[in-house]
Image: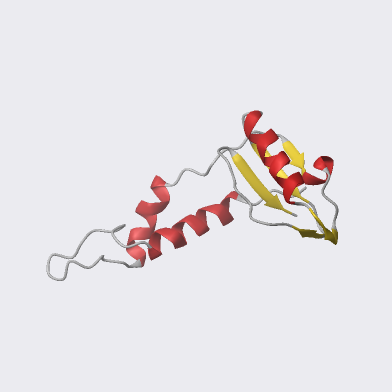
Length: 114
């Protein structure tokens, strides 16, 4: 399975930071955040990409079926629970159409959609 490139994660974090009020120095006159490209290097210097254990938990191993009609919610929940209890890793949703309800992630779980 292909893992997302660290550069992709970093740029997503930078984009989120650029959209967040209060991230940058305040202008003395207007009290509005000063947002320009000159702040990007300082943001990048503070970013530490998350690290996940090199363990995969494929939802099909927990009963998920990629037929688009079988409910995979319980299988996804079981894979997330197992990943969390093992100390973290990657919950893999392989290519296909999976029917699911709400997904609640836990600590140290990287949800990977193939």
